Length: 129
Image 1 (cartoon, helix red, strand yellow):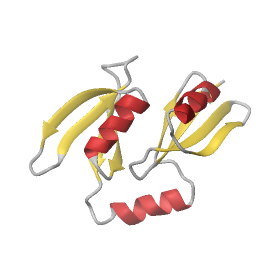
Image 2: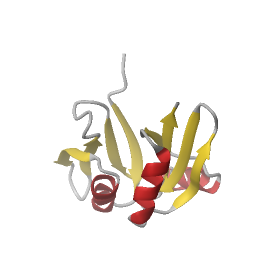
Image 3: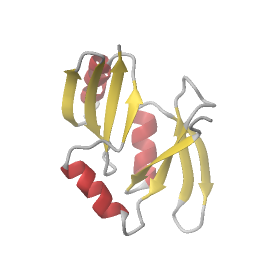
């Protein structure tokens, strides 16, 4: 068994696609209209295009708003992405205007940082040692 798909709820799929591809560097995998403005919209790592997909899921369900607000209020990331060098990614993304709620933090076996994805979520970057 392996993880094939995971998701984050986003306020606006087009804005999310722009951020996740043009800022974070993911690649669009699927973009299928679902009726109305909703789309089955996934991105993947360019280093693993057949790997785990991230679904940029519309946040229209009534439970999503309170759930995401509680996570953000408590500083809890919605998901985590592995990077080779947290400090380098922090510097690169900060240069692009990305807001971090936690700068690089060395915790021994892992270095983490947390960013605001501009779509309603906190995302953790992790560098495993």
